[in-house]
Length: 166
Length: 228
Image (cartoon, rainbow over all chains, first blue to last red; front, side, top):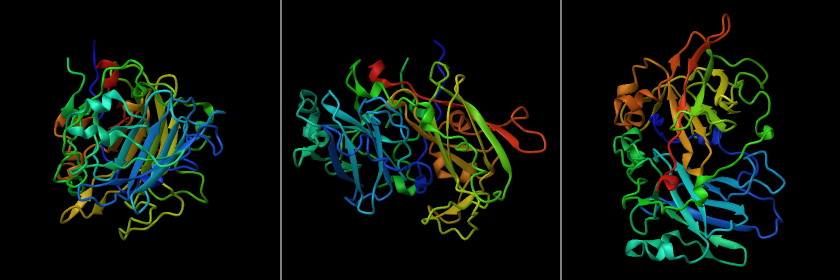
């Protein structure tokens, strides 16, 4: 098989807000959609400080584009973090146990790939050193979840290698 | 054959780019569990309404013509097997001709151009091709180290067909003397890989009496969940 080498990844830099945000970007489904939940959390750096210039993206498998959503909404949502490192996302949980998450930021030369598990899963228990707990979103209400992403150090979130190495 | 080509991409920790020091993961990465049903194998599906006419022309839509060299930037989005990635969303953002972003955080003392927002978007066609009309951005200083300057570049965000094919990269212009001094470009350790971020001047794309043309093909990675 002839394989083309990939184009290298580069950081989104500090000014991605020119090109990436759009109206309602944090809503994978419209307000009032049956079964919709709201996930909030913070992105934190190796010193525990909030990362105010990150972009969190999720994919929930529902059909639809980004800005042009189908009748069920978009399965995709994106949220830029606020000065306190906080993000919010509204989506309908997929059939499986988790939501895939990508985080981009200044200082991240490639995104980090993780998963927010909405329930306990044997896969989490099998991750060494108890680090599987970092992938477990916490239910804070019937339809509200909390999921922090710690990029480095104490409590570092488990990140997956999606083909770009460490 | 390894599915990954780590040298193609920067390491998370690239200390010459100071912002990586507290943001690079330090615990090593986990392999995705093999799962043909993994959600990461799919991604958004883009319809016609995703872009509106004019989104791919950054030189129009305001009151007048932006200042600077008008250029056409075009290329194909391909998968690792060389197949065109059709109907995928390409997002672009950039500084203006003076090297200034229309962003409150950019305090570089160079002029804002009221006729240039610096953002565009396009869908690839059946050949995987996108095409933007824009203004050649200027280089600009940043505070990473003493006398630090970024080579002129366009930021590209591409979706592909799988969530783990998501790629954000930067397109550079051929022959820029700032390449050897830029820690972001040099974070890609392999010279051949760095060269894949540099566009090519192209006569066939150049429009007589109107705009120089540059070609930039984008190759997305394979999806490890599938290969695991």
